[in-house]
Image (cartoon, rainbow, N blue to C red; front, side, top):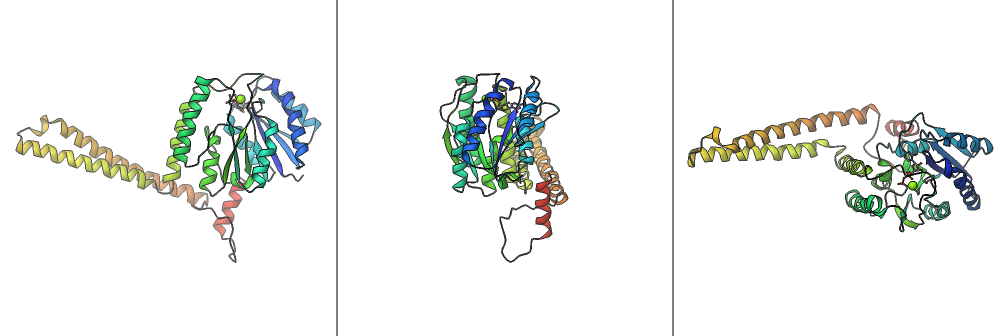
Length: 331
Ligand code: UDP
Ligand code: MG
């Protein structure tokens, strides 16, 4: 069945919300005039959400359901949705009605204007201030700064993507929130619109403060991947050379102390520092080398190219690119 719009909804213990969500989603989608499908990913719910989804799917072939064997997390649920989405446009939203389906047309309008990613900003967010809004504000500032894409709200699940920007993405951990960054690195045009946000009425939030450190660690990974994934030696080797140089400097200092200040080298703590820094530097350089080898295996074994091509003129597609595309379709 052809469809232009795929709506992806991750579901983890949301039984009370599903029956409210579906009709409002359907009426918005019908009004949008697009051919659509709704993909629910049941992320190992234990509250009977799966049974509700099953009966919904039985009533309407446009409702597709994937049930995970256990809880794999929201990122995994979303990527399963991306893998099966048939639409040209992909919209993701939460199952708990905190995102408002009424905002979907604005997201679609953004994509029709030519944006590849339309991210949403819960300007008036209805969550606990201290444990959710404050850490999220800090995280958004940091992510914007490091990722180089200025958005107010990375964490909002309601987002729209042109399907092609999702094709090259493998998501791990909490990384679905970084998709706008990945996409913009791959040349996508990203925009942000303000949307409504509602307090949760049924069920409970699956997250608390505990997620913050995971997001931070993922951010470090993303930064390292972006800057050094094709040349890890520049990162590790640079740090290694610096540490070695510092080691040599302190070794020289120790010698200076020995000859001019009469401090015996084995009594000088600087010697310890010199040895430590030098060994650390050597370790870093070796680590860079190991990473270089791994990067080669990564790109060469999967026939991945270190670049992405939008289109070509008068050039038959090279084998490597064709392979690359085939891999994207069957990750
Ligand atoms: N969710 C999921 N797997 C999880 C945790 C959450 O699929 O392990 C879904 C959840 O059902 C909801 C969405 O992800 O549809 C956002 O979760 P939640 O509302 O708990 O997060 P919050 O809005 O509090 O950030
Ligand atoms: Mg929520």
